[in-house]
Length: 152
Ligand code: RB5
Image 1 (spheres, helix red, strand yellow):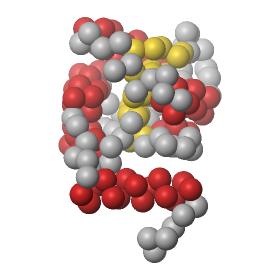
Image 2 (image 1 turned 180 degrees about the vertical axis):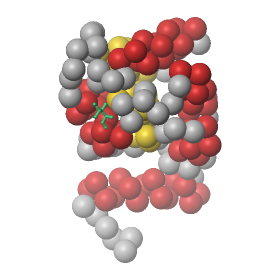
Image 3 (image 1 turned 30 degrees about the vertical axis):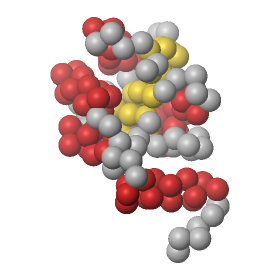
């Protein structure tokens, strides 16, 4: 599994910590940037990471800004992306089991490094409960993207 990693300036330090942590877990990742903590706009990084996942270049994406909100909103504008802005372990697990999230957004000003690492680990190791009602609902999300709301 190759993981795309990106942040804005607010998430830069946590991005480095998460990169180190992924290394400890022997999980390959691609740091898409930024390379410095200079002020930068989160939509650019959310988009770049989302495109890496969308294109198949990466399997999952982890993006980090101050709150996790702006960068997740940006990533979610890319077709096929289901990005969860996550601040707790329960959401990390359920967003995988029920929503098949393919991107995780963290808020560096919201969660500490320890919790962020735990969220990353749980989110990466939890499988989607495919088929059944969860599969059907995720398919409905894709239908909305296609402008096909025949389920109403
Ligand atoms: C940057 O100051 C901050 O607005 C950004 O990191 C993020 O929290 C936006 O959602």
